[in-house]
Length: 318
Image 1: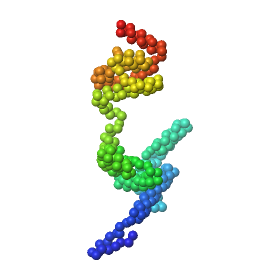
Image 2: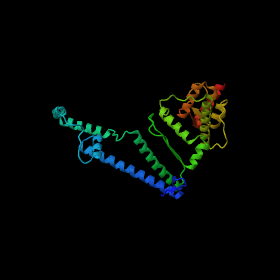
Image 3: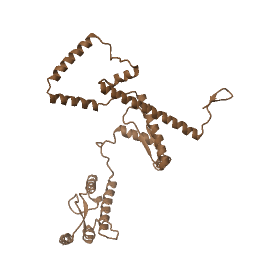
Image 4: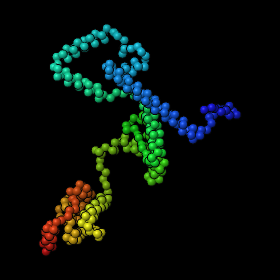
């Protein structure tokens, strides 16, 4: 694009139109993609040569960059030649003393170790940051095109999983997703990314962390809700049209005898009580665990079981 000159001799670029910006962005993405493909092909070529000839990846990279002539690891001296010859003799004798099965097992073990070893082509933090940035720039372009074609709405956040600050959080938000986070969640986009990064690095997502102690009133509310929901579901299967509320005070007569259902597996001795009256936090949590695991659940009584239950309740009342 041609430069223009102001009255004071300052060179400036003319303002780009929307189509020109898109074209410039597409060229940049294509260049980043081609460079990433080039480095991928280069890494694969070096890896293949290293595996074929038995040299290390570092040495192979050096030969690949320095030209056609091979360059040794270091300058040859008599001591290195002597040590290498002696090591070859010892290894040859030790290897020949192995049985055929032992030699095959040893070769297989070495091959597995080579295949599972993680090869690091470049440990330069700046290079890693450039590679990641190029990859996410390509992802942004692909996601933008996909959302434009299909009407999808959403977002993704990628953060560094360790304390090594090699790259900044990467985020992508469509317009509606951005409005949702800012309006409904009432949080800024960069702050959401930083919260995720601190959560991951601190290890709070690990299962061995201390269990969060829910307030007692919320535990009681959860227990009552589970008991009522399961009761409604069972009565619906029995085609009971009326809305039945759980009656803890007169449970045996108003619930068991009247509707032929019973809450089994009650984790405490005695009758079924309101969760707010069974004890403290530990007792209510025990009841909640029993309800979630369905060791305490509603069952439908047969006619014989119902008659036996009615007789049993009358005997206890007398």
